[in-house]
Length: 355
Ligand SMILES: *Cc1c(COP(=O)(O)O)cnc(C)c1O
Image 1 (cartoon, rainbow, N blue to C red):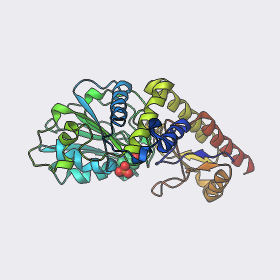
Image 2 (image 1 turned 135 degrees about the vertical axis):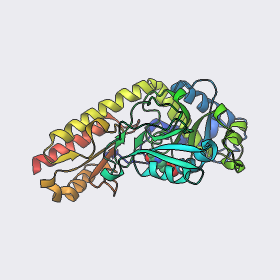
Image 3 (image 1 turned 90 degrees about the horizontal axis):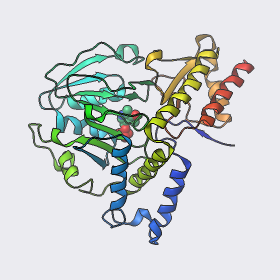
Image 4 (image 1 turned 90 degrees about the vertical axis):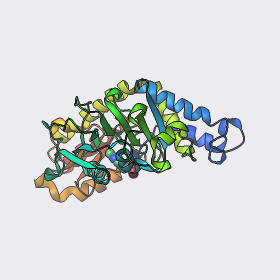
């Protein structure tokens, strides 16, 4: 049976990205050695990092003065590296979910943290609006897509201070005005590569201002100076990221990723709204086009397990909702297909007809 992958992360990648990575793992560039057994300093590997950086810059139209890093540690390490490097006295955080809250917790170790707004009391079912950022904040930290709750800020705010964004689950799914950010970071396993690499786009002249000593590995300047090669970077995940960046470019770039994401989301949310068994979980205007969350309508609540089993039986993978929301979550990152979304919709329709 054909499987449709809706995993929230690690998650679906284009088949050709997996196949091309597999080939290089067996024989890297015809060298007779595996990609997994060469030095990151091998002359064949440097072009991989160089091309990946160039493609990130091209796809997101990154202005001059920014550096692209490929590091280990996941987005979770950035939660502390960001304030370590950028918090001088005061930082502002928009609390839109568990990941945002975790980022805020680390920042408190380094200085004053202002929570500009929070939707925690409503189990993060919307993105707060109408907040202001203290003019003396060093940065505003936002989480553009809330993977667990299925809300998304699908635009670049206009604020009076530089922004820093955790884009782990929606990077490369839309055009971004990078000039508004001092840093953008993303764990790769949602929308870019396999787990193991984190991408960070950092504004060089915003570094070196924090009034503290920073351990070498946690100082972005170390990695800027050494081109992500201060220590051994995650070689295979970087290669997979390169393959995926090539794939995104060949498909038409982030504008096309945006168009496809909106098309998929339009299809699935229409069915969620139409189908008598289901309903969405978040404010309509804040619905994520990456992680689409839905639950059973109250009168059908007892069918939750039955629908999950039905969907699994039809080849749907990873549609169970996060434990803090319940119900279902269909993650539709860049690699998700219309065919996959249609298969899930057919499943929902068939289950409705049976009940
Ligand atoms: C998954 C996720 C994280 C955590 O990423 P790790 O790479 O596992 O540390 C952080 N932020 C967001 C928005 C996520 O979706």
